[in-house]
Image 1 (cartoon, rainbow, N blue to C red):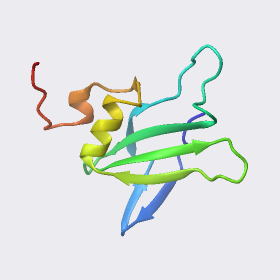
Image 2 (tube, helix red, strand yellow):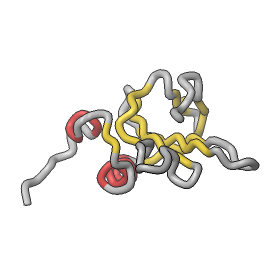
Image 3 (cartoon, one colour):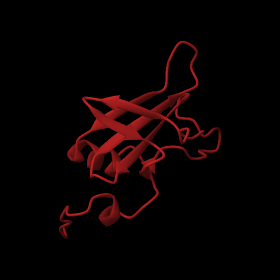
Length: 102
């Protein structure tokens, strides 16, 4: 399961497009039983203009796939916590965000 390249949505006068964005993280992975997290998967994208959005895909009847803009902070939280499959390194996903040593 992955977001269709042509999936896009205009929200608040801004066009969010899977085709024109970079996939930076997701939760689509084999866990020994399936690749879908309870019939749903989340994909996090970064646009060329520095915005972030998620695409949530569902296999459940009566639900629809969604595209939702998220803030940089929300995107970073998703990347660090529940979206364990990273398509790019942190520095590429969040340019300008300082990483501090513990």
